[in-house]
Image (spheres, rainbow, N blue to C red):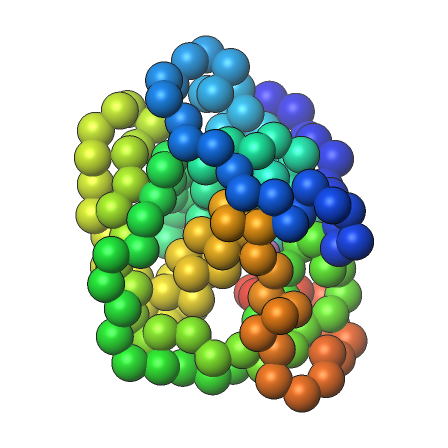
Length: 161
Ligand code: NI
């Protein structure tokens, strides 16, 4: 496992669409391990492969309930709305108000190659939507209502994705 370099806002790769993963190779597994290590080291709750410079449709999320690895994730259902602070490891030290679904159901391939569905609520729903947006080259900055503000370390720990 290794910590990879994060890509930051303004880096053109963050606006690109990531490609579907066709086969879970040892290289893909190594990337996933590195993404998890990089996310935890940065105190994030989620990370998309593009954020470490790899245009593959892979997301890792841990909102405090253990790691979830999602390959080729697709949000298939959403319900309700929530408005709250959101941050991103690619935009360090900042947060802004974003409205997201209160619940989001995502279908994805696990690291074991099996198909899964997961319904997330609150922070997990927010993280799922935020990370899936990364795979389509979208940053939360485009959704922010009002101004960005500086975050404290504790807030980053909970909200940066
Ligand atoms: Ni992000």
